[in-house]
Length: 471
Image (cartoon, rainbow, N blue to C red; front, side, top):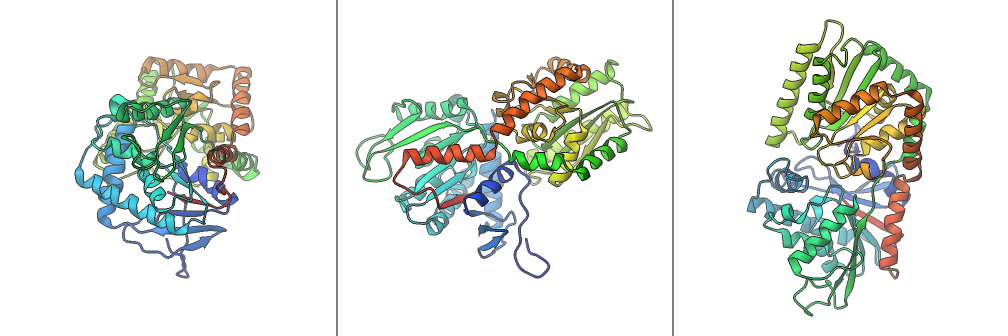
Protein backbone atom coordinates (compact mmCIF):
# COMPACT_ATOMS: atom_id res chain seq x y z
CA UNK A 1 0.00 0.00 0.00
CA UNK A 2 1.04 3.66 -0.41
CA UNK A 3 1.07 6.40 2.22
CA UNK A 4 -0.44 9.86 1.62
CA UNK A 5 2.96 11.29 0.72
CA UNK A 6 3.45 8.66 -1.97
CA UNK A 7 6.01 6.57 -0.08
CA UNK A 8 5.33 2.86 0.32
CA UNK A 9 3.92 1.64 3.61
CA UNK A 10 2.49 -1.68 4.67
CA UNK A 11 -0.35 -3.10 6.65
CA UNK A 12 0.18 -6.59 8.10
CA UNK A 13 -2.04 -9.42 6.91
CA UNK A 14 -4.65 -10.48 9.51
CA UNK A 15 -3.57 -14.13 9.34
CA UNK A 16 -1.79 -15.97 12.12
CA UNK A 17 1.44 -16.40 10.13
CA UNK A 18 2.26 -12.69 9.93
CA UNK A 19 1.09 -12.04 13.48
CA UNK A 20 3.47 -14.69 14.79
CA UNK A 21 6.48 -13.92 12.60
CA UNK A 22 6.65 -10.13 12.59
CA UNK A 23 8.27 -9.92 16.06
CA UNK A 24 10.67 -12.74 15.14
CA UNK A 25 11.88 -10.91 12.04
CA UNK A 26 12.36 -7.65 13.93
CA UNK A 27 14.46 -9.29 16.61
CA UNK A 28 16.66 -10.98 14.01
CA UNK A 29 16.99 -7.90 11.75
CA UNK A 30 15.65 -10.03 8.94
CA UNK A 31 14.66 -9.31 5.36
CA UNK A 32 11.08 -10.26 4.49
CA UNK A 33 10.33 -11.40 0.95
CA UNK A 34 6.63 -11.55 0.20
CA UNK A 35 3.73 -10.67 -2.04
CA UNK A 36 2.04 -7.30 -1.46
CA UNK A 37 -1.46 -8.81 -1.58
CA UNK A 38 -2.40 -6.79 -4.69
CA UNK A 39 -2.02 -8.02 -8.26
CA UNK A 40 0.26 -6.12 -10.67
CA UNK A 41 1.55 -3.87 -7.87
CA UNK A 42 5.28 -3.35 -8.48
CA UNK A 43 6.98 -1.86 -5.40
CA UNK A 44 10.69 -1.42 -4.86
CA UNK A 45 12.28 -2.83 -1.69
CA UNK A 46 11.84 -0.53 1.31
CA UNK A 47 12.18 -0.40 5.06
CA UNK A 48 9.26 -0.07 7.47
CA UNK A 49 9.79 0.42 11.19
CA UNK A 50 13.14 -1.35 11.10
CA UNK A 51 11.96 -4.27 8.93
CA UNK A 52 13.44 -4.67 5.44
CA UNK A 53 10.72 -5.61 2.95
CA UNK A 54 11.32 -7.06 -0.50
CA UNK A 55 7.97 -7.15 -2.35
CA UNK A 56 7.48 -9.70 -5.11
CA UNK A 57 4.90 -8.76 -7.72
CA UNK A 58 2.28 -11.27 -8.87
CA UNK A 59 0.26 -10.76 -12.02
CA UNK A 60 -3.52 -11.06 -12.03
CA UNK A 61 -3.19 -14.45 -13.72
CA UNK A 62 -0.67 -15.63 -11.11
CA UNK A 63 -2.96 -14.57 -8.30
CA UNK A 64 -5.77 -16.53 -9.92
CA UNK A 65 -3.79 -19.67 -10.74
CA UNK A 66 -0.99 -19.83 -8.14
CA UNK A 67 -2.65 -18.28 -5.10
CA UNK A 68 -6.40 -18.73 -5.46
CA UNK A 69 -6.03 -21.84 -7.57
CA UNK A 70 -3.26 -24.25 -6.59
CA UNK A 71 -2.53 -22.89 -3.11
CA UNK A 72 -6.08 -22.37 -1.90
CA UNK A 73 -8.26 -24.58 -4.09
CA UNK A 74 -5.87 -27.54 -4.34
CA UNK A 75 -3.43 -27.68 -1.43
CA UNK A 76 -5.57 -26.04 1.28
CA UNK A 77 -8.53 -28.45 1.07
CA UNK A 78 -6.24 -31.45 0.50
CA UNK A 79 -4.12 -30.62 3.55
CA UNK A 80 -7.27 -30.06 5.66
CA UNK A 81 -8.58 -33.60 5.31
CA UNK A 82 -10.55 -32.88 2.11
CA UNK A 83 -13.28 -31.05 4.04
CA UNK A 84 -13.88 -29.47 0.63
CA UNK A 85 -12.99 -31.27 -2.60
CA UNK A 86 -9.58 -30.23 -4.00
CA UNK A 87 -9.32 -29.32 -7.67
CA UNK A 88 -6.33 -30.55 -9.66
CA UNK A 89 -5.55 -28.32 -12.63
CA UNK A 90 -2.29 -28.62 -14.56
CA UNK A 91 -2.15 -24.92 -15.39
CA UNK A 92 -2.44 -24.14 -11.66
CA UNK A 93 0.51 -26.43 -10.92
CA UNK A 94 2.56 -24.78 -13.65
CA UNK A 95 1.82 -21.34 -12.17
CA UNK A 96 2.72 -22.61 -8.68
CA UNK A 97 6.06 -23.87 -10.02
CA UNK A 98 6.83 -20.58 -11.77
CA UNK A 99 6.05 -18.44 -8.75
CA UNK A 100 8.12 -20.69 -6.48
CA UNK A 101 11.01 -20.23 -8.93
CA UNK A 102 10.67 -16.45 -8.61
CA UNK A 103 10.67 -16.58 -4.80
CA UNK A 104 13.77 -18.77 -4.88
CA UNK A 105 15.49 -16.35 -7.26
CA UNK A 106 14.74 -13.38 -5.02
CA UNK A 107 15.86 -15.18 -1.85
CA UNK A 108 19.09 -16.20 -3.58
CA UNK A 109 19.74 -12.53 -4.38
CA UNK A 110 18.91 -11.17 -0.91
CA UNK A 111 20.50 -13.75 1.42
CA UNK A 112 23.95 -13.11 2.85
CA UNK A 113 26.81 -15.51 2.17
CA UNK A 114 26.42 -18.54 4.50
CA UNK A 115 23.20 -16.99 5.75
CA UNK A 116 19.92 -18.53 6.81
CA UNK A 117 16.65 -18.51 4.88
CA UNK A 118 13.44 -19.50 6.62
CA UNK A 119 10.72 -20.37 4.10
CA UNK A 120 7.15 -20.16 5.34
CA UNK A 121 4.14 -22.27 4.52
CA UNK A 122 2.45 -24.39 1.91
CA UNK A 123 2.44 -21.78 -0.87
CA UNK A 124 6.25 -22.16 -1.20
CA UNK A 125 6.95 -25.87 -0.81
CA UNK A 126 9.19 -26.01 -3.90
CA UNK A 127 11.41 -23.13 -2.76
CA UNK A 128 13.80 -25.07 -0.46
CA UNK A 129 15.11 -27.31 -3.23
CA UNK A 130 15.14 -24.54 -5.83
CA UNK A 131 17.05 -22.29 -3.45
CA UNK A 132 19.56 -24.99 -2.54
CA UNK A 133 20.35 -25.48 -6.22
CA UNK A 134 21.06 -21.75 -6.51
CA UNK A 135 22.79 -21.21 -3.16
CA UNK A 136 24.27 -24.38 -1.62
CA UNK A 137 26.06 -22.22 0.97
CA UNK A 138 22.76 -21.36 2.70
CA UNK A 139 21.14 -22.94 5.71
CA UNK A 140 17.49 -23.44 4.78
CA UNK A 141 14.57 -23.97 7.11
CA UNK A 142 10.95 -24.53 6.19
CA UNK A 143 7.90 -24.27 8.42
CA UNK A 144 4.49 -25.61 7.45
CA UNK A 145 1.79 -23.64 9.25
CA UNK A 146 -1.05 -25.93 8.21
CA UNK A 147 -1.50 -29.68 8.73
CA UNK A 148 0.34 -32.18 6.56
CA UNK A 149 -2.16 -34.87 5.53
CA UNK A 150 -2.00 -38.61 6.01
CA UNK A 151 -0.55 -40.39 2.99
CA UNK A 152 -3.91 -41.86 1.97
CA UNK A 153 -5.08 -38.31 1.26
CA UNK A 154 -1.78 -36.81 0.16
CA UNK A 155 -1.37 -39.55 -2.45
CA UNK A 156 -4.25 -38.00 -4.45
CA UNK A 157 -2.00 -35.09 -5.43
CA UNK A 158 -0.66 -35.64 -8.98
CA UNK A 159 2.50 -33.69 -8.06
CA UNK A 160 3.04 -35.41 -4.71
CA UNK A 161 6.63 -36.42 -5.50
CA UNK A 162 7.69 -32.95 -6.64
CA UNK A 163 6.32 -31.36 -3.46
CA UNK A 164 8.19 -33.77 -1.18
CA UNK A 165 11.40 -33.32 -3.18
CA UNK A 166 10.96 -29.55 -2.87
CA UNK A 167 10.63 -29.77 0.91
CA UNK A 168 13.67 -32.05 1.17
CA UNK A 169 15.76 -29.14 -0.08
CA UNK A 170 15.55 -27.74 3.46
CA UNK A 171 17.87 -28.70 6.32
CA UNK A 172 15.02 -28.56 8.83
CA UNK A 173 11.30 -28.93 8.12
CA UNK A 174 9.02 -27.80 10.94
CA UNK A 175 5.41 -28.83 11.53
CA UNK A 176 2.79 -27.82 14.07
CA UNK A 177 2.11 -31.30 15.46
CA UNK A 178 4.07 -34.47 15.91
CA UNK A 179 1.50 -36.28 13.74
CA UNK A 180 2.13 -33.87 10.85
CA UNK A 181 5.87 -34.59 10.92
CA UNK A 182 5.04 -38.30 11.00
CA UNK A 183 2.76 -37.95 7.98
CA UNK A 184 5.51 -36.22 6.01
CA UNK A 185 8.10 -38.84 6.87
CA UNK A 186 5.63 -41.55 5.92
CA UNK A 187 5.19 -39.86 2.54
CA UNK A 188 8.97 -39.89 2.07
CA UNK A 189 9.06 -43.62 2.78
CA UNK A 190 6.09 -44.45 0.57
CA UNK A 191 7.13 -42.32 -2.40
CA UNK A 192 10.86 -43.07 -2.44
CA UNK A 193 11.11 -46.34 -0.47
CA UNK A 194 13.83 -44.79 1.66
CA UNK A 195 14.29 -45.19 5.41
CA UNK A 196 13.73 -42.42 7.93
CA UNK A 197 15.30 -42.74 11.36
CA UNK A 198 14.64 -40.53 14.39
CA UNK A 199 12.90 -37.85 12.30
CA UNK A 200 15.89 -37.75 9.96
CA UNK A 201 16.25 -38.39 6.21
CA UNK A 202 19.72 -39.10 4.84
CA UNK A 203 20.15 -37.80 1.28
CA UNK A 204 22.85 -39.06 -1.06
CA UNK A 205 25.13 -36.90 -3.22
CA UNK A 206 23.83 -35.94 -6.63
CA UNK A 207 23.77 -38.89 -9.01
CA UNK A 208 24.51 -41.46 -6.28
CA UNK A 209 21.23 -43.34 -6.28
CA UNK A 210 17.53 -43.52 -7.04
CA UNK A 211 16.45 -41.58 -3.95
CA UNK A 212 16.16 -37.78 -4.00
CA UNK A 213 19.70 -36.41 -4.02
CA UNK A 214 21.08 -33.92 -1.53
CA UNK A 215 21.20 -31.06 -3.99
CA UNK A 216 24.98 -30.94 -3.72
CA UNK A 217 28.04 -33.12 -4.18
CA UNK A 218 27.95 -34.16 -0.51
CA UNK A 219 25.45 -36.25 1.46
CA UNK A 220 23.11 -34.24 3.65
CA UNK A 221 20.65 -34.84 6.47
CA UNK A 222 17.14 -33.41 6.61
CA UNK A 223 15.27 -33.31 9.92
CA UNK A 224 11.46 -33.16 10.10
CA UNK A 225 9.94 -32.51 13.53
CA UNK A 226 7.22 -30.51 15.26
CA UNK A 227 7.64 -26.97 16.59
CA UNK A 228 4.21 -25.76 17.76
CA UNK A 229 3.96 -22.08 16.93
CA UNK A 230 2.81 -19.50 19.46
CA UNK A 231 2.12 -15.78 19.87
CA UNK A 232 3.77 -12.63 21.18
CA UNK A 233 2.27 -13.26 24.61
CA UNK A 234 3.62 -10.12 26.26
CA UNK A 235 1.92 -7.89 23.69
CA UNK A 236 -1.47 -9.41 24.55
CA UNK A 237 -0.83 -9.25 28.29
CA UNK A 238 0.15 -5.59 28.05
CA UNK A 239 -2.96 -4.69 26.05
CA UNK A 240 -5.26 -6.66 28.33
CA UNK A 241 -3.78 -4.87 31.34
CA UNK A 242 -4.37 -1.39 29.91
CA UNK A 243 -7.19 0.72 31.28
CA UNK A 244 -8.40 1.72 27.80
CA UNK A 245 -8.86 -1.90 26.68
CA UNK A 246 -10.58 -2.83 29.94
CA UNK A 247 -13.05 0.04 29.49
CA UNK A 248 -13.66 -1.04 25.92
CA UNK A 249 -14.43 -4.59 27.14
CA UNK A 250 -17.06 -3.16 29.49
CA UNK A 251 -18.55 -1.15 26.62
CA UNK A 252 -18.79 -4.28 24.49
CA UNK A 253 -20.72 -6.09 27.22
CA UNK A 254 -23.01 -3.11 27.61
CA UNK A 255 -23.58 -2.80 23.86
CA UNK A 256 -24.59 -6.47 23.79
CA UNK A 257 -27.18 -5.86 26.51
CA UNK A 258 -25.07 -6.89 29.53
CA UNK A 259 -25.94 -10.59 29.15
CA UNK A 260 -24.97 -13.14 31.78
CA UNK A 261 -22.89 -15.07 29.22
CA UNK A 262 -21.05 -13.88 26.12
CA UNK A 263 -19.66 -16.59 23.86
CA UNK A 264 -17.14 -15.55 21.23
CA UNK A 265 -15.91 -17.03 17.97
CA UNK A 266 -13.07 -15.39 16.02
CA UNK A 267 -12.13 -16.94 12.70
CA UNK A 268 -11.27 -16.27 9.12
CA UNK A 269 -14.38 -17.12 7.14
CA UNK A 270 -13.17 -20.57 6.16
CA UNK A 271 -14.84 -23.96 5.89
CA UNK A 272 -12.17 -25.53 8.10
CA UNK A 273 -13.17 -23.43 11.12
CA UNK A 274 -16.40 -25.22 12.00
CA UNK A 275 -18.42 -22.01 12.34
CA UNK A 276 -21.61 -23.72 11.20
CA UNK A 277 -21.11 -26.51 13.73
CA UNK A 278 -20.98 -24.10 16.66
CA UNK A 279 -24.04 -22.27 15.32
CA UNK A 280 -25.92 -25.57 15.15
CA UNK A 281 -25.00 -26.50 18.74
CA UNK A 282 -25.96 -23.05 20.05
CA UNK A 283 -29.27 -22.97 18.16
CA UNK A 284 -30.23 -26.39 19.53
CA UNK A 285 -29.49 -25.26 23.10
CA UNK A 286 -31.78 -22.28 22.55
CA UNK A 287 -34.48 -24.48 21.03
CA UNK A 288 -34.28 -26.89 23.98
CA UNK A 289 -34.54 -24.06 26.50
CA UNK A 290 -31.14 -24.86 28.00
CA UNK A 291 -29.91 -21.37 27.07
CA UNK A 292 -31.98 -18.18 27.07
CA UNK A 293 -31.45 -15.54 24.40
CA UNK A 294 -32.25 -12.85 26.98
CA UNK A 295 -29.06 -13.53 28.92
CA UNK A 296 -26.83 -15.31 26.38
CA UNK A 297 -25.30 -14.11 23.12
CA UNK A 298 -22.86 -15.57 20.63
CA UNK A 299 -20.62 -12.93 19.08
CA UNK A 300 -19.01 -14.20 15.87
CA UNK A 301 -16.18 -12.33 14.15
CA UNK A 302 -15.66 -13.78 10.67
CA UNK A 303 -12.82 -12.00 8.87
CA UNK A 304 -13.15 -11.87 5.07
CA UNK A 305 -10.99 -14.50 3.39
CA UNK A 306 -10.28 -15.54 -0.22
CA UNK A 307 -13.48 -13.92 -1.38
CA UNK A 308 -12.87 -14.66 -5.06
CA UNK A 309 -12.66 -18.43 -4.50
CA UNK A 310 -16.04 -20.01 -5.27
CA UNK A 311 -16.12 -22.30 -2.24
CA UNK A 312 -15.59 -19.29 0.03
CA UNK A 313 -18.37 -17.33 -1.65
CA UNK A 314 -20.71 -20.25 -1.06
CA UNK A 315 -19.59 -20.55 2.57
CA UNK A 316 -20.32 -16.89 3.26
CA UNK A 317 -23.83 -17.26 1.85
CA UNK A 318 -24.41 -20.36 3.96
CA UNK A 319 -23.14 -18.80 7.19
CA UNK A 320 -25.09 -15.59 6.75
CA UNK A 321 -28.28 -17.52 5.97
CA UNK A 322 -27.76 -19.49 9.17
CA UNK A 323 -27.26 -16.32 11.20
CA UNK A 324 -30.47 -14.86 9.81
CA UNK A 325 -32.41 -18.05 10.51
CA UNK A 326 -31.16 -18.39 14.11
CA UNK A 327 -31.82 -14.73 14.86
CA UNK A 328 -35.23 -14.96 13.24
CA UNK A 329 -36.16 -18.06 15.21
CA UNK A 330 -34.79 -17.11 18.64
CA UNK A 331 -34.00 -13.40 18.72
CA UNK A 332 -36.16 -10.76 20.39
CA UNK A 333 -36.59 -7.05 19.76
CA UNK A 334 -33.94 -6.31 22.39
CA UNK A 335 -31.63 -9.30 21.97
CA UNK A 336 -30.09 -11.04 18.95
CA UNK A 337 -29.03 -14.62 19.40
CA UNK A 338 -25.93 -14.13 17.22
CA UNK A 339 -24.02 -10.88 16.79
CA UNK A 340 -22.29 -11.48 13.45
CA UNK A 341 -19.41 -9.28 12.29
CA UNK A 342 -17.94 -9.88 8.85
CA UNK A 343 -14.78 -7.77 9.01
CA UNK A 344 -11.42 -7.68 10.74
CA UNK A 345 -10.44 -5.65 13.78
CA UNK A 346 -7.20 -4.21 15.16
CA UNK A 347 -5.49 -6.12 17.94
CA UNK A 348 -6.67 -3.69 20.66
CA UNK A 349 -10.31 -4.33 19.78
CA UNK A 350 -9.77 -8.08 19.64
CA UNK A 351 -8.22 -8.11 23.11
CA UNK A 352 -11.20 -6.12 24.41
CA UNK A 353 -13.49 -8.78 22.91
CA UNK A 354 -11.44 -11.52 24.56
CA UNK A 355 -11.83 -9.80 27.93
CA UNK A 356 -15.55 -9.31 27.39
CA UNK A 357 -16.18 -12.94 26.43
CA UNK A 358 -16.94 -15.49 29.13
CA UNK A 359 -16.47 -18.41 26.74
CA UNK A 360 -14.23 -18.74 23.68
CA UNK A 361 -15.46 -21.23 21.07
CA UNK A 362 -12.81 -22.75 18.79
CA UNK A 363 -14.54 -25.53 16.87
CA UNK A 364 -12.15 -26.00 13.93
CA UNK A 365 -12.69 -29.14 11.88
CA UNK A 366 -8.96 -29.14 11.11
CA UNK A 367 -6.41 -26.49 12.01
CA UNK A 368 -2.64 -26.43 12.03
CA UNK A 369 -2.55 -24.55 15.33
CA UNK A 370 -5.25 -21.88 15.85
CA UNK A 371 -3.50 -18.94 17.44
CA UNK A 372 -6.80 -17.33 18.44
CA UNK A 373 -7.07 -19.90 21.23
CA UNK A 374 -3.69 -18.79 22.55
CA UNK A 375 -4.55 -15.10 22.12
CA UNK A 376 -7.68 -15.56 24.23
CA UNK A 377 -5.73 -17.31 26.98
CA UNK A 378 -2.97 -14.69 26.97
CA UNK A 379 -5.52 -11.89 27.21
CA UNK A 380 -7.26 -13.32 30.27
CA UNK A 381 -5.04 -11.59 32.81
CA UNK A 382 -7.94 -11.94 35.26
CA UNK A 383 -7.50 -15.75 35.20
CA UNK A 384 -11.14 -16.10 34.17
CA UNK A 385 -12.98 -17.31 31.11
CA UNK A 386 -13.39 -20.76 29.56
CA UNK A 387 -11.83 -22.07 26.33
CA UNK A 388 -13.83 -24.66 24.38
CA UNK A 389 -11.31 -26.10 21.93
CA UNK A 390 -11.52 -28.57 19.07
CA UNK A 391 -9.30 -31.60 19.44
CA UNK A 392 -8.54 -31.23 15.71
CA UNK A 393 -6.70 -27.92 16.25
CA UNK A 394 -2.97 -28.13 16.88
CA UNK A 395 -3.43 -26.02 20.02
CA UNK A 396 -5.22 -28.98 21.64
CA UNK A 397 -1.85 -30.73 22.06
CA UNK A 398 -0.73 -27.96 24.41
CA UNK A 399 -3.89 -26.44 25.90
CA UNK A 400 -5.11 -29.57 27.62
CA UNK A 401 -6.98 -27.71 30.39
CA UNK A 402 -9.44 -26.38 27.82
CA UNK A 403 -12.74 -28.18 27.31
CA UNK A 404 -11.77 -30.36 24.35
CA UNK A 405 -14.48 -31.27 21.87
CA UNK A 406 -15.04 -33.14 18.63
CA UNK A 407 -16.87 -30.45 16.60
CA UNK A 408 -18.61 -33.13 14.50
CA UNK A 409 -20.26 -34.37 17.71
CA UNK A 410 -22.92 -31.69 18.12
CA UNK A 411 -24.21 -33.22 21.36
CA UNK A 412 -20.67 -33.18 22.74
CA UNK A 413 -20.26 -29.50 21.77
CA UNK A 414 -23.56 -28.71 23.48
CA UNK A 415 -22.44 -30.45 26.66
CA UNK A 416 -19.16 -28.53 26.62
CA UNK A 417 -20.97 -25.20 26.18
CA UNK A 418 -23.29 -25.95 29.11
CA UNK A 419 -20.32 -27.06 31.20
CA UNK A 420 -18.61 -23.75 30.39
CA UNK A 421 -21.72 -21.69 31.16
CA UNK A 422 -22.22 -23.31 34.56
CA UNK A 423 -18.57 -23.88 35.51
CA UNK A 424 -17.77 -22.69 39.07
CA UNK A 425 -15.42 -19.75 39.27
CA UNK A 426 -12.83 -21.81 41.15
CA UNK A 427 -12.65 -24.33 38.29
CA UNK A 428 -12.49 -21.57 35.68
CA UNK A 429 -9.55 -19.97 37.47
CA UNK A 430 -7.74 -23.26 37.95
CA UNK A 431 -8.03 -24.17 34.28
CA UNK A 432 -7.13 -20.69 33.04
CA UNK A 433 -4.05 -20.40 35.25
CA UNK A 434 -2.73 -23.67 33.82
CA UNK A 435 -3.48 -22.54 30.25
CA UNK A 436 -1.81 -19.19 30.80
CA UNK A 437 1.30 -20.78 32.28
CA UNK A 438 1.72 -22.76 29.08
CA UNK A 439 1.19 -19.81 26.74
CA UNK A 440 3.45 -17.50 28.74
CA UNK A 441 6.30 -20.01 28.85
CA UNK A 442 5.97 -21.14 25.23
CA UNK A 443 5.63 -17.85 23.35
CA UNK A 444 6.61 -16.97 19.79
CA UNK A 445 10.13 -15.98 20.82
CA UNK A 446 10.71 -19.44 22.26
CA UNK A 447 9.18 -21.06 19.16
CA UNK A 448 11.48 -19.18 16.80
CA UNK A 449 14.54 -19.69 18.97
CA UNK A 450 13.86 -23.42 19.27
CA UNK A 451 13.59 -23.66 15.48
CA UNK A 452 16.70 -21.58 14.75
CA UNK A 453 18.72 -23.42 17.42
CA UNK A 454 17.76 -26.75 15.87
CA UNK A 455 18.71 -25.42 12.45
CA UNK A 456 22.12 -24.31 13.74
CA UNK A 457 22.76 -27.78 15.16
CA UNK A 458 22.00 -29.41 11.80
CA UNK A 459 24.34 -27.07 9.89
CA UNK A 460 26.66 -25.65 12.56
CA UNK A 461 29.13 -24.23 10.07
CA UNK A 462 26.60 -21.81 8.64
CA UNK A 463 25.69 -18.52 10.27
CA UNK A 464 22.18 -18.05 11.63
CA UNK A 465 22.67 -14.37 12.36
CA UNK A 466 21.52 -13.13 8.98
CA UNK A 467 17.91 -14.20 8.51
CA UNK A 468 15.95 -13.87 5.30
CA UNK A 469 12.37 -15.03 5.14
CA UNK A 470 10.22 -15.88 2.17
CA UNK A 471 6.49 -15.73 2.67
